[in-house]
Image (cartoon, rainbow over all chains, first blue to last red; front, side, top):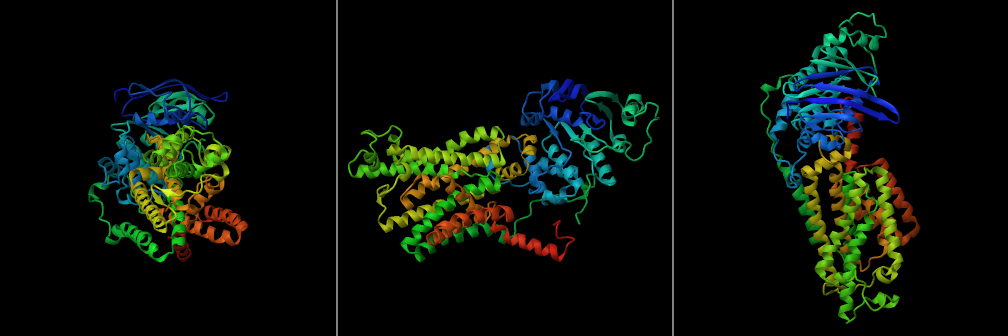
Length: 261
Length: 379
């Protein structure tokens, strides 16, 4: 089932007459680390919402040969598709270990559910190691630093053996070191999974993206490697307002845009 | 003050983590508390209290049984169950119907006394008939409330009705149920309810010895249900329920259906309320619409709110304490109690969400924050 990756055809999402996503086609191979960028309101988060079943959409979204549109959220999640949100949502009153254990457990039988957890499941141990949270596993998730919460969220996807990760601004609000660590984490987990990242941080995108799709006004404006996309005159126009601007300097986030609602 | 670890491959050198064995005291804290509770309820209370007081305690313990369910559904699951009176009433009526039929059979009648008065005709209504069987009636005290909760919960949770809407809906149900009971005077005893219950499975309830036996049954059921609820609290299901309470949407994205998780807590809480109602009947000798409507329904959650809804022991002690205060105060100042009840609820929910059980923690945290403003908040 891993051979096909994510295929999106003619995806369209409309809210009360406003078209947020307007006929998007995407092909994301397994093992890709795809960045979705675009100005505010480009439809990036809505696209992810549609793929994960949170908003109704028309068109087609297939993953591993299965059509996703029309399925309820928890069914899509069970197909091996996981996502994070702009604001890290972990279960603050539960410990790191409990968070991961719950994430690993969809599909446990009623008898297992009614018993106390004995020991640590193997996939939880692995996720703790991958995300570097082993030492913090008995802390309540509410006291974790911002970056650690994001890693915990990613860990909660890893324990489920998710095949496709959709991450919404995973490095927003992170320190430089945390960004670097997150980037390396994403690179490692994308080796045998498909990872899609919505991001505004251009530096981060340049350092870690394997491929990039630029969204604008609900449509795919440009697609390709980081260099190809940066050289695209239309992308420069959208971001900088002028077509004649040379390739943006690698430096602090070239596009100072606020969080997308 | 938090140690910043990074997901870079620095973890290889760390020793494998194993579950640390719980310290001795920690391991025996819960069984110890349970044992103390059992000795108090089953040993000391029957010796120390007069027949009258012990009977009152049996009544309070019935409310405590409801509170165990409230603690699960509201404390852990975040479902503000403002309509537990319905389930309490269903359990109570199921039990009382059987006992009334048994009482009538003793004197050679086919109809319970109130039906002869209000003229339901000569025949027993069809839905009363199966309750002549003690096994059926006993099963119904639990299954009937659970079935009603399952049907209601299925639609309510699937439609994602939550928060205040859920509370109002369950409250409306309690009101409707009480109104229906009053309207069916010929078959339910109307406003009076089912009263003057003489026997309990062949035992004469006027005999103080048998009243004591009823107390022991209530106390034992309470202890058993507390043990069962405790197991639910510490199980994986209990962790999942807290997760649903705190972030339902997130749980859905992990591949669970939160509606089912909530449904289980709601149905179990309903079953407990039903059992409490069934025990209430022999302990107090009556079940009536006034015990199932809005006011008692709110009363059921106030005890848990005051004691601490998330803490099992807090909810149980709170329920007993509030019921005791109510019967003490409402004798002297009948009007004042209603206001005090409302005040207690608002204060507990608004200012001390963890109830009295959390008072120690709250005060300790406060002292620590004022002592050391730097580390106080984070730990």
